[in-house]
View 1 (cartoon, rainbow, N blue to C red):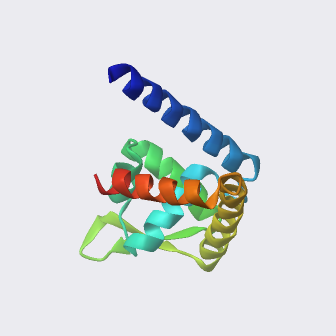
View 2: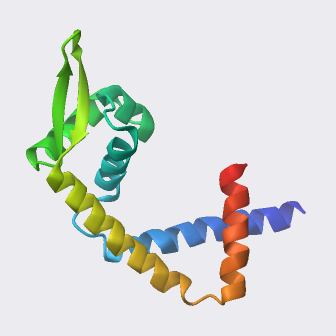
Length: 136
C-alpha cells in the first residue's frame, strides 16, 4: 500500500512538472506569479498588500517589490485607505485585465493540447479525481 502511494505521489509530482513545462513554453505576457496576483486581485476585488503576501506565502517586502513592478507595468493601481494610510488596496487596471485574459487563454490552450492526448474516458476519470482532491 505504501509503495503504491509513493508511486502515486511520484507520478503526481512528475505530472505537475510536465504541466508547468507545458505552460511555461507558452506562458504568455505574464509570469505564473504575476498571473496569480492578477487572478487573486480580480477574485477578491480590492485586496491589501498583506493579503497578496499571505496568499503567495511570501514576505511583505517581497510582495511590495512584486507589486511595485506590476504597478510600473500598469497591471495594477494602488489605492490608500483614507481611514488608515498604512493600508494599501490593489485594483486591477484595464491593461491588467487584458494581460490576465491573454495569459489565461494561452495557458488553457496549452493544457487543452496536453489533455487531448487522453481518451474521453480518461479525462472523465481525471475530472472525478481532481474534484476529489480539490474538495478534500
